[in-house]
View 1 (cartoon, one colour):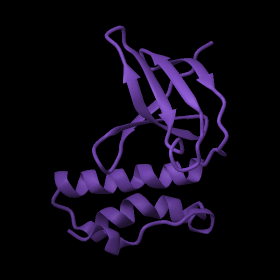
View 2 (cartoon, rainbow, N blue to C red):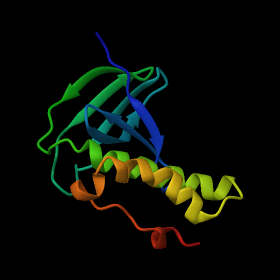
View 3 (tube, rainbow, N blue to C red):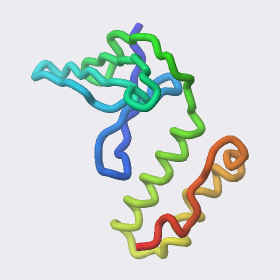
View 4 (cartoon, rainbow, N blue to C red):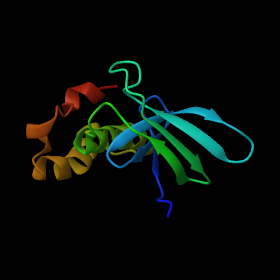
Length: 123
């Protein structure tokens, strides 16, 4: 049975997929709604993880040589949300940062991975 993947936009406005604790970038697509994605650690850690989807459902998955990191992915999603909201709303950056990042701090994510400070979002 196929599982659905989650798509989010990176801080560079590129689509990124997450599945089973791994993050992927689009690498090939065709007109039949079939998409092949490679692990974002393909270049830095030489990971060979590949995800093939059709209509956002997983068709096949090649094994990874890197470890999954859901915490880091959650932080990346929140950073992308902050950047998007700063452009779309009139709220202050500090208010948006507090709203988006406080759940991560409450879960103790700052112990597990580096969370950007508000100064990273100054425009």
